[in-house]
Image (cartoon, rainbow, N blue to C red):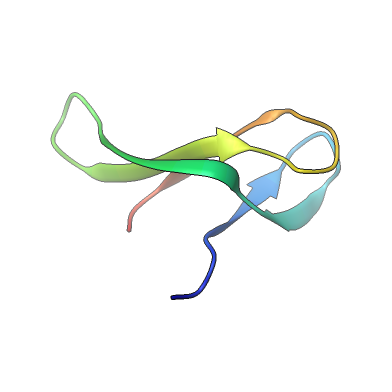
Length: 48
């Protein structure tokens, strides 16, 4: 299974999401939440 990627606004680059968790937002849409492996900033990506 491929690792999930998201955009880190602090690094200004696409990074692999560390400790990725699949969540469901209040409106019912799926999302992924985790941390940037380089700087530790929270990464949030909407969609599967």
